[in-house]
Image (cartoon, rainbow, N blue to C red):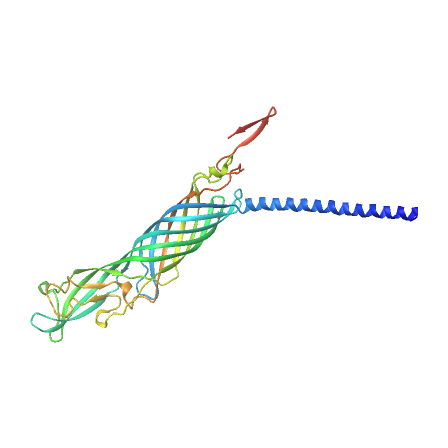
Length: 362
């Protein structure tokens, strides 16, 4: 091989080596960049997708109404209270101002609500008097009140957002009505209507009263309910964000106060069919005795007003409505990892350098 050829081969080897070296350097630089990006992604993901878990208790109270549709009787008015347990997940930046919220819980709810109606109604019960003559025992009913006491188990499923001290939750609440009782009161005028004698009134000895009170109590069956729920409020007192060493362990209890609204989207009442003799508009009176025989001690004393929620003519459906205030206490569940967090709420430190030293001031 000539000297010129040998020199040319050596140059080719050097150029090839330089190319490989350059490629290797570029690859190393890219790998370092990828590693840096990966580390940044992990750091950002840890910070931005920080998840905190809370266990809490809540108490709420407000106005409770039952709203019948296509009914001559308007909505009821009353009060309700509820207490329960809740689990809350908060996701988002620990040090940011906005976090995603997810709540699930269970609570016991109790309340009383009443329908009031001045619509006059009349019921006639076929009877036989002490002389064996047939007549209709008439109830003229006015100023009726039907009150319903209810005990229910509520399961809320809510999602929302928290920004600073403000928060909002929206979702559904599923309610199982486990115990419902009705209490019906009404004023009544009672008299007899004979085919031969006409109307006979004003005779208390045979229970023809100008004014008497009918007081009835019964159990009521109600369907499973589903409410759309909205809750808007804010944290009160000291904030849950802190600064300093071991900030994870320094998370404090959160206190919240909010207004809420629950609107029922399902029909919650059962309507049973009543015998024609028992049903007159919304004033349904059970016979005083099974054999319809007139007895001086039973016609008023044993008269029973069938609660209007259980009648077939009351409404096509009944919806639930609750509006009130809610107080919640959230306790932070343990989290893994310690560290120093720089937060802007509740606890602040300023650092001033003086004379080459560092001084911390609260």
